[in-house]
Length: 567
Ligand code: ADP
Ligand code: MG
Image (cartoon, rainbow, N blue to C red; front, side, top):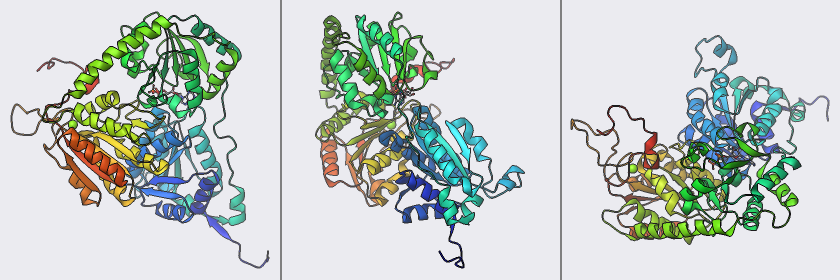
């Protein structure tokens, strides 16, 4: 090199992009503004796919879904203070659901923020983020960008995955340093999510418990789906013959019509199982905390989880198996003698008999075709089209739209169902749908309650702008839960109502996508079939009876009952 030539320079923007690329980050979900606009531009110029949203919570939800689907941290990019705060919902939801993601946010000048001098979008974002994520870090010097990004990525994806907040003040992005020196500060993570094997004696303890069980049951959760240990899981379930129940996002890990699925005999399975093996599933509210009367009070629990602190959180765990699902099942397969674990035939038959009866009852409910259209009819139509399009992803949120779709729509492929998750949160719809389409290139069907859709509905513009193969199917009954409630004073709409006969299909048309209005299941089938074949943005507004649906769906018991109960 010529000693007289001016030094080649780099800056914070370039170092952030270089560090992300060095660690295989290929997509950023964000919303630009001061101080991160040039960061998005540069990332795009350097070959990182940038997906720009209309609201930050949808961008962070998208990053979370990307993390779940790919087992690599999804990246969200937000501006200071309000943009940062909007993004926190997605960050917190990702952490609750154990999805790996990093929210990178620009922030205001430290010296002004710390003395509260009143800067543009002033906020102590690091302090605010701390309680909503797995970890929060700030990069305060340009030479720490490589270290900060490596640390954020590893924290998100190792151990129990979760959301990480990474604060980068504007001044750091604008800092200039020598290019060669800057390159030396970057590093590529080695083994970002190391395997975690259980100890042999822990495995033997669990094997013995399973071997002695009369009515064993496996519960597969979204941690099992996330693990991408699909072959191992299938081999374990099928070689032992143990009936299993999939939590909603574990549907499809084994096809829902698998003979060992006890999903359609769920209450019997929980009530009677004597040894329960939880695989990447938590005994939280979604499983009634493992308590009687839903569960057998004498049940013994085996728990496979990567997070030791999770164990004993609700019920005593008789056989803890701390490790990643793949490694745990591998060691079980190595140490169990052939035929040692085998579900008794009587138990399998008892569940199969109950399943058959329940399936028949459900078939009766599904066959009816009353007018106006009910949830069941519209969802049956979606189910039938999805059966012919198993590669399509399903996103699902709402109350009744969620409860009923979960039961009606079978999944056949692992990780193809993304829903409201651990919180039962509304607002994930378009963010998850966009991420599923972007990350996989496959068609996505988002089955949405009309109220749930409203939280992220503006992102239909994003779907159209990027020409994504997303079909939104809205169960439009004109309300939160249902659309027929009246206000006794008759001077304003009731709290649960939305606009009756709203035409969400015209929203999609406004941005250049294809809109459909369906009033019968046959019209839903025709529209969805056409939309999937076309492969572009579409929205089917399903006119559902405003009187259909129940308050809070299946979780009405969570509404506190005061003296107004029953009024
Ligand atoms: P669900 O709602 O489907 O029951 P949860 O989100 O409640 O699922 O539980 C997922 C569990 O899986 C969490 O406790 C998490 O620590 C665990 N987990 C996540 N990834 C892995 C993995 N690779 N191996 C083992 N456990 C995992
Ligand atoms: Mg509704």
